[in-house]
Image 1 (cartoon, rainbow, N blue to C red):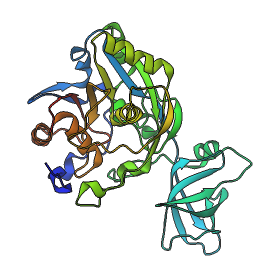
Image 2 (image 1 turned 135 degrees about the vertical axis):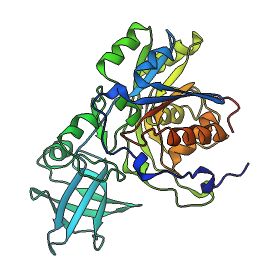
Image 3 (image 1 turned 120 degrees about the vertical axis):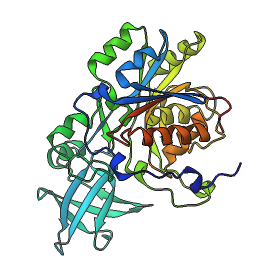
Image 4 (image 1 turned 90 degrees about the vertical axis):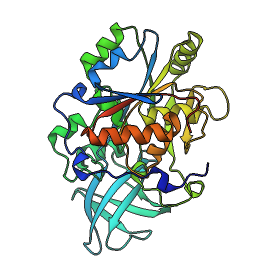
Length: 346
């Protein structure tokens, strides 16, 4: 079956896009999709859907203060910088919004506090050099702002500083949260441990490319953005133990799934770090993940394509239609799904 971008479109009323986080993380709704059937649950019911010995794989990345406002030093023109990724202690790739794109050599004054120099372009991003006197991440934490997704139509406030991070975030580097993890609180994690569920960790730093629309009608023409990941030895060993015991590897979020599946493209999963630009479409054969916890994704997005590959295109269409009709909340601050993998998903 040849799929096009239109196969992953759906009508979403704007009021279904969550603009605020719930006061209690685990009070989110949870749609359990298993094959052709789905059931409405609450996220705190998750221990009822997992078994002792199952392995939850979390992404421990932490969102950095990647958004900076400033001006061009020579002209005073206003600019907005969104860091895509650090590529050294004093350099980064970034999106730069300005009336005219800056050229190599342009000096930008950011947050009325320090200056950076545009070195050049790398594909869709600008290569920026930051002051050598201070570490890049330290500068960003002091002077930058938390970057909320573009479909949240407000500026980040003090509440977002906590709620747009997972409770287990520890490795700074993302410009967007691994949002499936936002539903976990300390009490739920403890209940899962008491249930006999095992935990493991990966790190995948989410780039701004996760929000970039697919612009090609024919999906084989789409160039997927690349993201860095790290899979520790303990995690690779835990996955082996889980599989050998006949239990499930459950990815907490599409970022964890991308790290695991991306690392297994050349054969058995091995520990280590690397970059993945894996583009998962219906017909993909999953090598590592047996179940997925994820939020609801944008129309025509690569993440909607990923979950359609995992669960089947028609089951996802029906589940999303049910969620919209049942007034689930969508996207980063929205509700979640627990999806069992279908080996025959198309």
